[in-house]
Image (cartoon, rainbow, N blue to C red):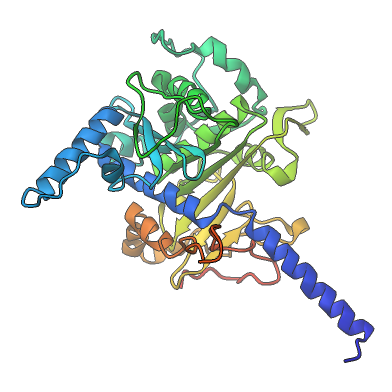
Length: 418
């Protein structure tokens, strides 16, 4: 066959498109990691008012198994079998705490299978956290400098406050969400836990429990850090992820969350989006003329999953709140559409969410509320497991749920969840 110059050009275009698609697919966290985060975000709800630590969690699961298997002779007390009922395979519980005064539930786990440490926050579970969801005033990002720490086991605010000096001027976040993460020594405790856990150590005094064969302090390199959560917990996970980026400016940190409301103002959004790996690394300060100064080799990026017409990601409706990070829209029929930085980037050719996205939930409020249920996120993402290893290879081929961000030329003009 004779190749003309036009044919060669077409082949080159197809080849470049194929390479770009392959590179884009690997930009997104793989489907198994996303499913792990969804399971953790859902599971942490079940710990409310039932356990006080990782060790009381395992006792609870043993009791449930004994109750359900009372007529069977196949009962087992092995932690591995117990943890498969609640947490992703290959994970161990390192820390769990429920601050009743704040309504904050947080769970820290480590996966020896996928080599990560993840922090999961629970969402709205009672009237206390419901009221915090509705607290729409803003505050500076980070710990309150007037908060007097009384816990001698963690650092005081004066020791960690310097890392927040890198936050650009004018950045404001939802005051209730910020309080849930940073008040009552919450951030101090999580930071100390992560510092140990990412290198193979434990957090709680009695050590970790769960599905693991890891020797403590045996890691040759630190595990990757993820934050996750659903609803209010998703907002908390975003704030924690940004704080961890300031604490570990040379690390790659990702927040994979579900049904996340808007967290901060436009300057918050600009700052967070500037921390992505394709935008030059860490923002450490803003200069007098407003330009962003960057340093460090690390990154922080947000992948916010939205199930159909879930109402909560459209809230708060106030103009000074906006989304940061990428929106991954889960729609009826199995397609997931990724929108770069939520509003898109015309210079890169990426589209933002379609017109009508904000108002879509109000067309059918019962469906919008049902779409927010955490279990529905898990059920949706279970359609995207990694392929099983073939007989000829021990490698697991990842089935990506999305391969590229929506392009301006391909994006629908009007939002539809169908």
